[in-house]
Length: 152
Image 1 (spheres, helix red, strand yellow):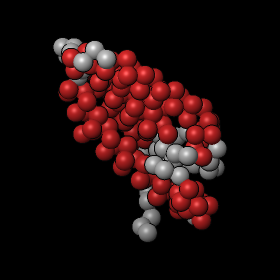
Image 2: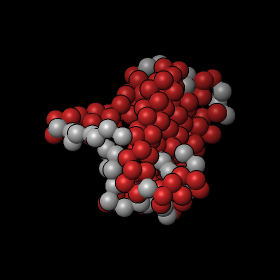
Image 3: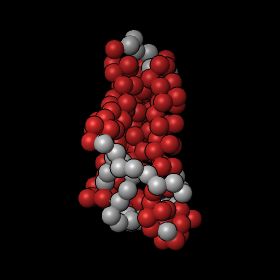
Image 4: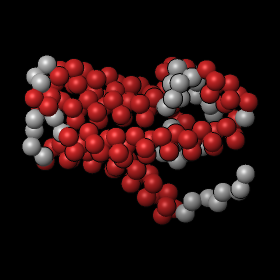
């Protein structure tokens, strides 16, 4: 495996600020575009909002459970495998996805939903794979055992 160089402070800042801003963009698209709540299906709005709220709760709980191990860039001092991390390796990404998708479906934002599937999902999958590679290298068999018993 090739040796990786440390990131420059500028690159680290761009990743720490730029990546989270990519999650804000679909919400801005939904905010400023015409609304077709629930894509014209009124009953879809409360279901989508409930999904968004569940995603937000998952996101926040996962961040608290991660505690000081939370980092925007791959790497960790310890392996977190309790709470929601007992079942999901990436509950923050799952929470982000559910939150954005729920809110955008509730607003009836086709461009926003498209952005989630074309940008947010691939971004989160790439980030998850990079994290898994770094954590596997760092924690070895303990991380492999964790991979084997958890879902995304």
